Image 1 (cartoon, rainbow, N blue to C red):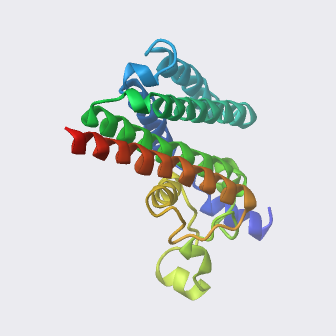
Image 2 (tube, rainbow, N blue to C red):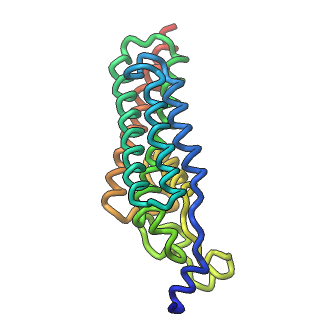
Length: 224
């Protein structure tokens, strides 16, 4: 075995998946909490579909069938994204008929948090080939996002105990949160075109929820 292979093997640490499990369950829970008018079909249908994809995904991960897990993971992310977009469209369509500011603000908040989590899952799944490729190498020398740790000199990385640093879901959640609040990247510049497209889409959804829907709520309050 070569010295490089030994170094990668010694540094190898699988990315934690429990963050992702909590995130996916949170999206299902947020969807379940939405008003009935923003849900397509029975209230239980979307969470059941999510769980039906989530369970085999983690089983495939445990059995190390990574190719199948990757396909199931993409299917799960697509379902979560479609569910969120449909709810946003439903809310825009129902906007003139909503007379309760509290209901509107609650729904907007649920969709805003869903937007953050869904796009964090996409960034986590796509950056640098996904979690399986990232965890097979020591450190994180390149990717679609330029994290501050990637720009640190080797000596500074060693002093900060960041030599083999690699991002996990929390780092991508931070990027998604900043995109939905500042409508732009903050600590991690975007390098890849696919990431720029996703961040633009996320910003549009966030802006729609915050500006349009919140403005309607203020209008309702001013008329009451």
